[in-house]
Image (tube, rainbow, N blue to C red):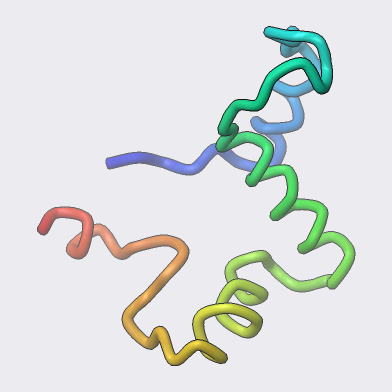
Length: 77
C-alpha cells in the first residue's frame, strides 16, 4: 500500500531535487507539486489539509464516501 511521504520528507527532497526542464518550458503532472500546495494551504489556514479537503470539497459536494486517505481495508478491495 502506498504510504504518503511526511511533510519533512517532501521538503527535504525538494531541497536537493534537480529541475528536469527549464521553468515554463514544458508541462508535467507532479504529485509533489500537489503535496506542496496542500502544505501551503494547511499552513495558511492553520488546519490539516485532510480537514480542508473535507470541509471545502467533499462535504459541500455531498461526497460522503470520498476520503483523502483511504483506510487500509478499503485499499485492499
